[in-house]
Image (cartoon, rainbow, N blue to C red):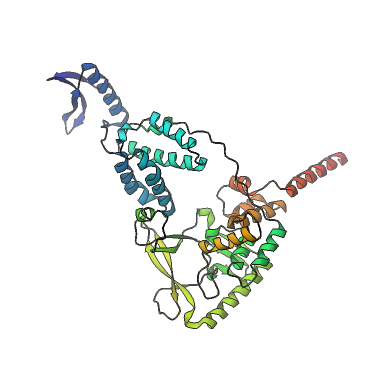
Length: 426
């Protein structure tokens, strides 16, 4: 490839040959350099980039703020789930734009980003927050390199994430005494009884348990099917409008059925006699309550909509029974006496009561932790536990939900002692 420099007026320019298009020679030229050395340096860089990428990089004058908006529209909206979009926008609007929004994108260097990373640590942010902020910024800069060609390289590539000592999150495993106290506080008839029973006896995630409908439950086979999860989100509004509310209640929010968390999350879960009796009684009670409340009973219908990516989702719409609706009805498992939906948000009240009255550090995930731990303590196959919990990776089961309890420690000792005795006899 041939090229050179030349002086035009008071400034220098470079030029070099590209390939031939339709038999005609193509040439790239750029001027405005103050000295011949500057032009020669720029020429070498341009030729190198052309050889490596097939195109000459032209630095963009776009600001970080405008670019992040562009990245969100071109990449995030079509590809990310609603909840991820919300998290990304919170980072963009709450951290990245206030700090670097006015910068030219091309002015962002590794040194600037390293200083920013260190400052996040000094400001006392949690490790997950620091990693989240830097990861979002890094992902956006990757996109600026390819396919946008705004940058020739991602400056985040050379940034060292600060080491932050984080105390491991304490996983709460309920004792049977704890569980009995909880279920006595919320006996059959309480709107929280069935959600608690489902969590304890199946280990479902909170978004899975509160998405259950009666057609997901086969009482005869004593099994339930996890085929969806429930989320709260805005309808008929851009995600940006949610962020602009800054935590204020959004009047246009609703509950939606969406696809399960992962492919392995779709599963069938067996349950035993205790949960069978509880669900059987609950089904009967709900039918009796619907008759008792009559036209004032709350039912739920499904309205199909499309999300930002064009995927189908189902909005759960509550209506009084007296109001006729052409939309298909869905019978939720977790409801109050009058038929109103008991949501994951509603369940926070239950968690507060357990915390304040029973003095237990509890959330719904405690039931999942406890379920898995009891299974492992009792000798259940870890692979079966993985399938039951809906984990894609068995390491998640081992590292997150299998706890080093005293019972496990004693069992390991017993196994070792038995093995030694057998070796002595052989």
